[in-house]
Figure 1 (cartoon, helix red, strand yellow):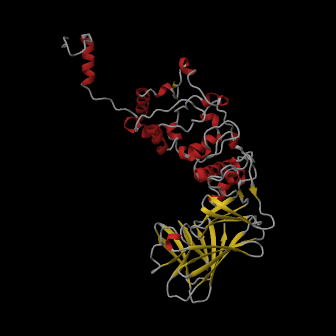
Figure 2 (cartoon, one colour; figure 1 turned 90 degrees about the vertical axis):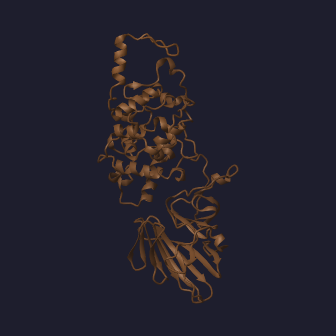
Figure 3 (tube, one colour; figure 1 turned 180 degrees about the vertical axis):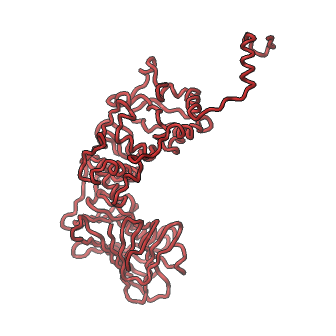
Length: 485
C-alpha cells in the first residue's frame, strides 16, 4: 500500500493486490503443445507477418510495406507464408535452421526478411509444431504407395521428364539449381526435399488449393488423375514419388529438358564423341564418351576409374563452350549409374585388409592416356607398380531392349608375382550372387564377371564390396565385366 521511493507506485486496489497474490502463489496451469505454439507466436509477434489458422497475418495499415521484386506473383510473392500446418509441412532440421538462422529461400521475390530468434528462445517450437500439426500417413500419400517395380534411378529419370518442358513444365515458374526459370522465378525446385516432408509434398501436389487457397500453383494431378499417360502406369502417386526422387538429388540433379535456353547438345551419330572437361561425378579431369548406341560413360583420369555410365542423350556442352566455361557439366541422359570411387586396383596382404584410401595418383597410379580402335572407341590405359592395365568399355546392343549394356574388358599385363592384387568391381549396401559370375547390387543393377578365380563379397566400412582376384602369372590377365542397368 505504501511502496518505498525506489519502487514504482502502481496504485493497486486491495482487490487487485489479492488477485495478484492468488496467481503468484498458485501452481501454473499445464499447457498443451497448441498453447505453447500460440503463446510463442504471440510473445515474438510472429502473427505480425504470418497467419496461422484464423489468427494473425499482415494488417491492412502495414500491407503496403510488404513488397515483391516480382509483382506478377501477387500476394504469394510478397506476403510471408502462412504457418497453418507448418509442423506437417517442414522437416524438423529445416525448421531448426529457419528458427535459428532465419530464411532467405524466397529472396528472389519476397522483400520481407525473416528474423533470427535463436534456438534458446523458439527452439521448443519444433516439437510443438510437429505434435500439433503432423498428420499420419495415409494410403494415398505414403511413400510405399508410390513404390515402383523399377530401380530408383529409373524412377528418378521419369521425375526428370515430368518436371521438364515436355511434360508438366515445372521449370516454367521454378528456378532449378543455378538455372533461372523461364517465367516468374518461384522457389528453387532443388531445395524442395531439403525443406519439405515427403508425405506433405505428396498431398500438396494432389491438391495445392487445399493447402494454399488462391495459389497460382496449378494442380499437376487434377482430381487425382494425370495428364501424362505414358509413364509409370499413369499412376499419380508413382509419378509424384518419381518427382520427389529426382529432386532429392538437389543441385546434383541433371537439368530437366527445356531449361537451358541455348543448349549445345553433342550427339554421337556414326562414331563416338569424346568430351574432356569438368563432369559432375567424374572430377576435374573427366573424359566423357558418347556412343551412337545411346550408352555413355565418364572416365575419371585422376582416379583411373570408370566413374559412371548412363543411357540416352550424351552431354550439353553449353556451360563450357559459352562465356568462361566454369563449373561441372552433368550427363544429359538418364539412368546415371555411379561406380565405385577411389583407385580401381589394390595389392592386399589379406582379403580382409581395408581398401586403400587417398588419391590414386598419391598411391602410385599413373594415367597413360587412351587408344582408339577402328570404330573410334577408346581403351583407357594406366599403370601401377609395374602393372599395365588397358580398360576397354564397349556398348552391347540387346535384342528387344531400348538401351544397350556395357561390356568392359580389362587386360592386366606385368611380371609374374606372388602379390595378391584385386580389382574392386562393385560397392553397395547389398551385393547378392544370383548365378555363377553374376551379382545383383542394391537390387538395382546386375554385374556379370568372367576371368577371375574365386570372387569375394566382403563387408568393409559399413558397405559390401565385390573383389575380383587377379592371377599374375607373367601372361596378360583378362577380366570381362558386363553392366546391366
